[in-house]
Length: 264
Image 1 (tube, one colour):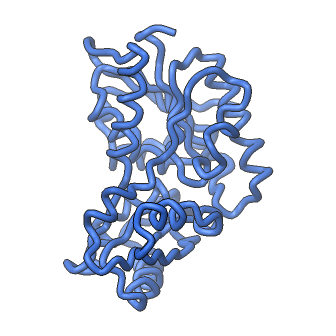
Image 2: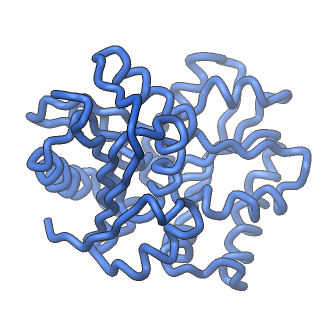
């Protein structure tokens, strides 16, 4: 492997663009190859076996492109485990950070909310990691099944989105949480709406920045970090490109990006 090879980034759809933004900010000279499986999104309601099969198709495609690292910019994919994601490939896999340190630094009453897909909440992965660091912490998960279709459908500001935010925020407010972690990479698209719904007494945390730092540390350790030249991102979707571009405009500087539709 060499420094000029791209970093692969995978997600079930467009949510991982929030992670791509953090990666670009942390490693501005790198080339990124983003693959969002928008034709088959969302993944959060699918079985583990189906998700594993879809991920294998994405990693096979990226292996052919010669990536030096893979970032799983999706919590639903991450909870499969890095060994499962990697399969027989040789590139290292960086999964989504669960933001444990950020959460425990922010919380005062140790009542922590988790907003994620049903699949991610069901694994208990966030609860286990947070309670391993602080057994006194309580973690309350809510499966936010309505968010991804609304975000993918560009329904920002719609009555349906406002209703869904109210429903999920109310469920966590009933548990008196003072900190909420966004356990799905789609949810930073609506972070400002969530902060408004929860009010100033609740800290809403996006762990994307911590994920980007982990990716950078891996490349530095292997002497593969690109430290000069302009950065560039090729963003590939398995579904409609125009729909993806509309959402990308909310997260990225499109001057440094190109878009392609691909088949797996």
